[in-house]
Image (cartoon, rainbow, N blue to C red; front, top):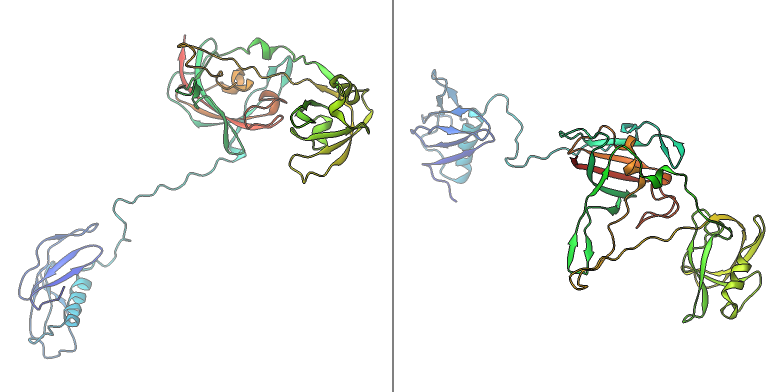
Length: 372
């Protein structure tokens, strides 16, 4: 818009001024400054190269001498604007701040030094060191006490990713979902975690194998955590081509294949393996047989209802550390706690979901309510 000799507009961080020759400036309020009332009076001055502003005795009145033939172009108007604005500006201005854009500083990441350690406890009939924990939120409800029924949600995170969670709804028949919190009696370990773990052991390579009649090959189904096959880098879906020089395994009875893989502890067996993730070329590996635990099968229970419309498996299995009283002691309703879970009180050598066997992970527990 073109400027006129009658009106000048001035804007500054702390105030807004509208000035007219021989007129008075109305009351204005800056976005962050104090209330200002100013008067601008025009007066002649022979020196057209200097424009000087002086204050009258009135503390809020400003005299601005203006030449009688003040320039009417844009540049002249801007010169007058600059004088008025600079004269009215306070001696010390505050830094400009955007209105409505308040950014909260990012919270400091919790380090391992911020974690505390719980008291030691008994687990599977043996003494166990305490686990490290950190309270994300203290909670303002009732204190968790022995004998109470705790209702919690839990989330297991492995390498920063959610692997197992009670918050993730399980699907029933593809058209109904339900998210179920965990309920348990606090203060005592379930019997299956109080007794020593008894597992059947087998001397061999620590792998389960099976013949695929369609592909006509012997392949690895699973490997035992930290067993001979796992140590040699053999993984599920790898193909076994020969065992101690015996080939054409498709025509060898599965019982004889088992006898070839098993043997006395400390003896060696040489396999020719074709890796699933490799280039397809066979490679030879020598394994030393040892006693390995037989990994139990995971239980999957189907629930049917509504004429078979809703079917699905049970909610994910919580890690045993959830039931350890020392791990949750001191929590209150509404509280959230992070726990560093070692494998032996986690998912051990079995694993769960994206958590591999033998892995340490972090568990977040939120105490929703207490009953009883």
